[in-house]
Length: 119
Length: 282
Image (cartoon, rainbow over all chains, first blue to last red; front, side, top):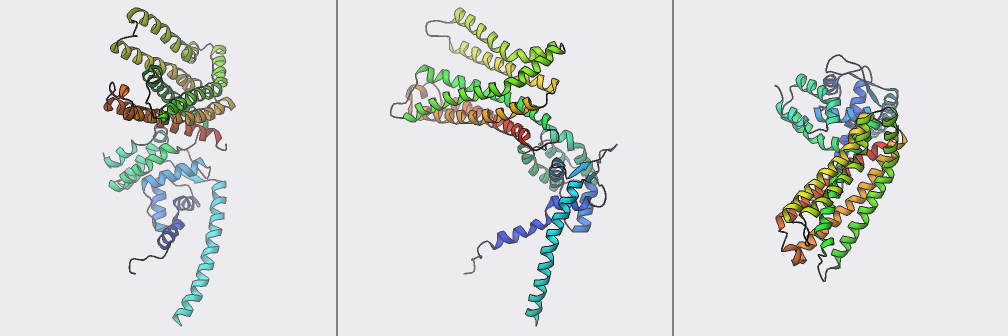
C-alpha cells in the first residue's frame, strides 16, 4: 500500500540527526580556542554546516557550564568568551572516538555494498 | 532597538537566567541581527529554563526556590483552610457520594503531613539563621525570622477580638468573613515572606539548607495531593451537594480552583527545583 511506512523508519531517520547534537557542536567549536556566543555560531555554521539559533545556543551553554564541561572567561564587554574544561575535552574526546569508530565501520561497509551494487 | 521580538522572548526566562546570560544573548542578537526565528527559538527554550534552571550556584538556587515555595505553600495552605472552613467545618456533604468524604480525609491528612515535613525539615535551618542573627546582632533579620510566629499569633488575636466585637451566634457576616479571610492571607504572606527575606540577606549554606530544600520537595509533593483533593471535593460539591452549590456559583468555584491549581503548580515546581539543587552532585 502506498501509505505504508516501514515501522520506525521515520524515527530512525530523525535520530540520525543526533550526530549534529548541539552540545557536541559547541564543545567541538571550543576545542581549539575560547569563543563567545556569536563566534561559536559562526564557527559551527562555517565548519560543521549547522546553524545554531540563539535559544538553542544558550540552552546548551547553560547546560554545559552547569556540568563543568565549559567555563566562562572574564570579559569587559557583553561578549563573554567560553573555554572548554579538561572534563569537557575528555568528554569530547570520548564521543569523537565513538563517532569515529562508527564512521569508520559505516564507510567501510558502505564502500563494500556500493562497490557490489555498482558492479 | 533591533530584534524586538527576540528581546521580548528573553523576558520569558527566569530572572536568574536573564541575570546570568541576558547581556550575552543581547550581544549575540546585536551581532547576528536577531529576527523572528531568533525570537521563536528563545521563546521555545524559555520553559525548560524555568523547569530546569542552570545550577551555577546550588545554594543560591536552593535559597531562591525555598523562598518561592514557602510563599506559594502558604497561599495554598490559606486556600485550603478557606475550603475547610466553607465545607468540612460547615458539615457540607453529598449523600450517596462517599468520594467527597474521602477527599476531605485526604485533604486533612496530606495538609498535616505536609506542614509537619516542612516544619521539621526547615527547623534546623531556621534555628541556624536565628542563632546567627542574634550572634551578629542583626535585629531586622531576627524579626524576619520570627514573623512565622508573630504573624499567626497576631492574626489569631485580632481574629478573636474581631469575632467578639462583630460576631453573633451565627458567626460573622459575609463582609466580615471576607475581611477576616483577606487578613488571614496577609498574615500568611507576612509569615512566609519573613524567612524568605532572611534567606536572601543571611545567605545560609550547608547541610541545613540542603535538608530544608529536600524537605520542601517532599512537603510540596504531599501538598499537591491536598490540592488534588480540594479540586475533587469542590467538583463533587458543585455536582452533587445542593446545599453547597446553592450558595456558591460555578464562577466563584472556578476562580477558587484556578487559584488552587496555580499555587500548587508554583509550589511544586519551585520545591522541585530546590530539591534538584540539593541532590545534585557538587
